Structures are given as C-alpha cells and as structure tokens.
Length: 371
Image 1: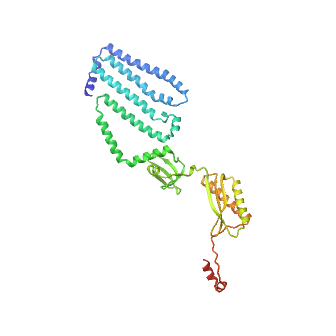
Image 2: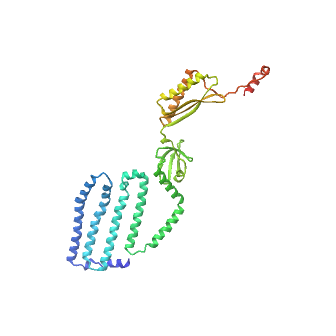
Image 3: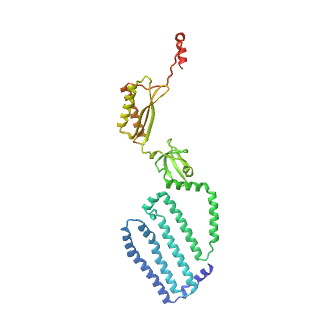
C-alpha cells in the first residue's frame, strides 16, 4: 500500500512537457464530450425503449445506472489522461488500481441505488412469492449492507490489504452479537413469519392468548394492537408467531346459536307450528345467510322443552351483527305470541303423598319448601 502511494507521488505535472499536458487535457475533454452525448441522446433513447415495455424493472435499472455512468466518463477521462501523461510502470500500475477501485465504487453505487427500490423485484414476482412491502424494505436494507461490505473487501484486496483477519473478526463479532441479541433476532424472524404468512393485516380484529383487539401497526420487532378498552398493547412478534391467532375480520359469516325453552304445557301441534314459523322467518330474513339454518325441537329439559337454533348472519361487522340478532329475537317473540306459547323458566314441582300435611302447613312453610 505504501509503495503504491509513493508511486503516485512520483507523478508530477511539472515534469511534463507542454505538448503532453495539452494532449492529456484534450483526452479528458473528449470524454466529457462523450458524457454529454450519452446523456442527451443515447440515454434518452434507451428510456424511450424501456417505457414501451410492461415491466418497470428496466426503467428503474436505467435510473439507477444513470449517475454512475455519467461519473464513469469522468473517471475514464482522468484514467486515460494520466496513462498518456505517465511513462512510469509503477505509476501506471497504481493508476490502474485507482481506476479499478473507482469502477468497484461505481458498480456498488448503481446496485445500491437499485436495491433501495421495491421495483427491483417485479410486481408479479412479489405477488407470486407473497412478499410484503415491509419485507421488501427489510430485504433491501440487508442487501445494501451486504453490497457495501463486499465492495469494501474487494477494494481492500485491490490495495493488498489482508482481509482474512477482518472477515474472521466479523464472524466472531457476528456470533457474539447474535448471542447477545437472541430475543431481538427471534422477534425479527417472528416478524418475517407474520409478514410472509399474513395471519392478519393492519386493521384486522384478532384474538390471541395474549391480546384481543384491532391491529394498528406491524413492525419487525413487534405488533401493536388496540384493545377494546382503547389501550395500546405492544406484543413481541416472537410471541405472536408461536400462538394460535383467531382473525375475526376474515369470517365470511357470523354464527348465532342458542336454545329456546318452551313450557311443558306446550302442545305437540303448537310446538310443530312454532318450529316451522321460526325456520320460515329465518329463511326469509335478509340478514341471515341461507346456507345453514337449523331449527329443531331438540330435547326434554328439566323444566323446558328446548328448541335448538343454529344459523349465520351475512354481516361480520359487530354493530350490524347485534342489530340483526336483535331483530331476529324480536321476530321470534312475535312468532311465540302468534302461536300461543310461552318461554319456560327454571322451576320445580313438589308432590305430597298426604294432603293433610299440606293443609296443616302455613304459607311460609310452603314457600320455604318450594325453595
């Protein structure tokens, strides 16, 4: 490295003849002219060609390499001007090392700029691989870090630096960092799993063993959920990735099921009529999903004759669901009134073998006995 720096110092403009200096300057000006021609004509012509394609990747690629290529003409001008002006082998070797280092920097510049855009992977490919924009941003940062690290290593090797110890140190440092940041890395990988699999999206209503509410934000470390008491709960992604998640927003319909108990004094004819009328009402109700509707006289309970109801509402929105359920309950009450049946309530009947015992008991004793 020191020899190359000393070799560069040996190149002095004061040792050059006027003719050599003028030709070197003309070479540099010639590349500046080429740069202007390329920018004004060639590059605009290429942009017109790429604008006619369906993919936006080629447009983004040209935009990423525009500035590096314009800088490349300046580097080429300086390189060839110095090569012409110098007749020293050592100086030319050092100029070549500088030129190769500059090329590496320019290539890194172009790739760095391209990797910072979400369009470096086409929209169709992202949709096929199910890659989210958040994940694209994460991959972009990782790729940029790798690009810069590789460029530094290549440039260091170009200038005869021994990078083996540096790489080994990075490996040991990375291992120590991974052990120290074990929980943080677990949250990051949990965030990648959540973003890739998409068990929920921002705005969804979810329920887990840890939290229930609406998702407000998803990052690589944690997920923020607004609970129903309006508190904001921040849950680590590693926790969510290992829990069962119920996403109520993705319900196609919402279930309603319960038992309607009628009194034991209900006759068979009225029971059949009540079941038929309730089912007819549910089938014709605009808020009830027509696919699954069950209304059956199910069982003889301890103090009631139970009708089993099982159906779904078309809406999954909580407020609309409550309104539909209320309307159905009111219509069931109307059916019961029209048929002439009553809802049962828990009760117990007591029979005495000796009526004289009942005659001798006071009203308070009978009340206590009935309890």
